[in-house]
Length: 351
Image (cartoon, rainbow, N blue to C red; front, side, top):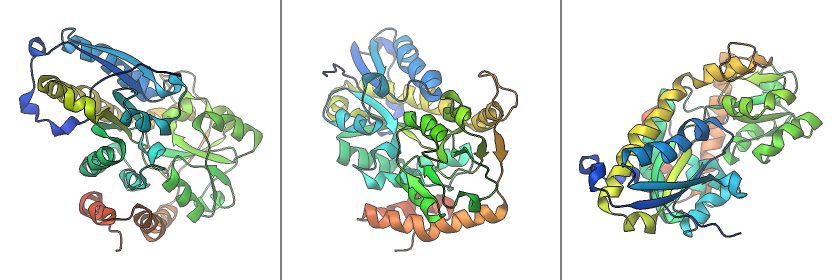
């Protein structure tokens, strides 16, 4: 399958906003953009409207966009940045955790339990941006432009659950490698499985539980094969990175670079983060019989874990998960993490 796609974006915060150009000064530019999951709220509410409406309108038609998503293309989320680096298309968006097979150091962007609300999750990603830019450049020949959130990744179970102890022995689909290791450290069996396969696997009993965002689970109907919802961000926030092929970015007119940088920061990234603040509460309401503007409310049982369970989870994170990641990432990544995310949250990886 040959995909013709070209675009521009990658170095978001690398271009000074003071250099922003007016739409009248922009040269005509055509961008080909690949978004994240087409059926999930981040694409439906923010990605699509930003690229297909905001950018053309704000540029007075100087910038035109051809957009699809990786699932509409028939490729996996883990292929997006490989294809981006090869120049198959210009701008790509995918969940950071999908790419850690190629870049294990990228797991440090989304550590479970570090951020428990949208404000702290945004602070975590801002602290990680210098690392992410280096990783995208060195691993994928790409320039990172933005990091936007999915809601916190919580646990859907088709079995009765009231504590972390109840997860022991259960087969649980993780949202990434670090999440699966975390679940295994809690006594569960971490299972790797494509997002789209989860509802059927829950229904057939192939797995007992699965981790994803509450909104993603609602939008994809996971509540039809799940009964209990465990409200603890065991899977982090599954941030989505927007990046542009480095050669494309460097070939863009500086006025276009500045315009895109300013627009993606204020009209896409900031708005997605602002919405994330109330998204968890809204999504949980939709899943557990509350008021639901998105459609008919489901009737899952909400499980809020005890302070003792939360403390146990944090201990596992600090004593097992982070040291394991530091070994796999190698190099000076533990030091860089300690000096950025760790410093912002008073968490240290022992070296």
